[in-house]
Length: 311
Image (cartoon, rainbow, N blue to C red):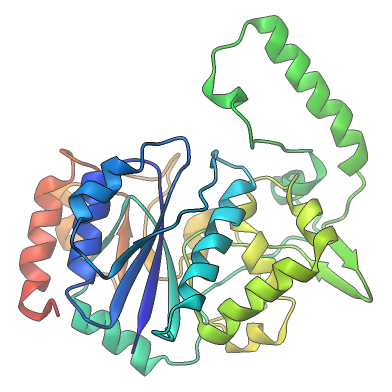
């Protein structure tokens, strides 16, 4: 079972290298890495020099938290992996603070046993009356620039918020259903980490190239990496191959886990060695988040537990 791991990275090059080297001990596993264009790529390339199962994306995007460029970057990863002669059967989206909690043998066995299943859960938020979800598309969002990384005086902040409010006049009556051609696409919501089959990955790339109105609309959605791919899948025949579909709406991202275990009380928890037993008791393949220093002992414990079957 050939698997392409698609890693969106902007920090922690040591962890990125650790995960890549761990996964690519399996000759059927390759990793494709997109390094945020705001970051120095050499910091990520140097620790992985000589690993010929790791590929860095050359067409890099400046990715901002909550911005649409995360979609463009993910598409670049998909396109690059799909071009490979390796003919991957699964494509797994990671972010650079994810860590495998199962051995490579267990991960490969999991995809073999579940072959044909799409691991991209989502709940329908289009036409919702719940403002918690409706605000994701009724309020105009735009985060693909440097504004959120810079210090601003109060006047500039107020001017920016006023601009967003004016732009929201265009979207406030949007009901979360994108109409393009003779089809309707009801917005769905889920987590940014998922895994899909080759057919579904090919469908994503073709869809993105042929639905300009859909893409334009998604550019003002809040956190589009939590809606873009999920909306495509759950408005297509692929939803019937999902691990679950037409699920009732539940608040909070933890309800829509695919292959990752994470906790989200107020923000995503950074795990340490005290979380080891809890994490290893999970059925998931990965945990999120780990960080250098705080999670070093945890990663060592996980590696020790999974090293007997690492390849």
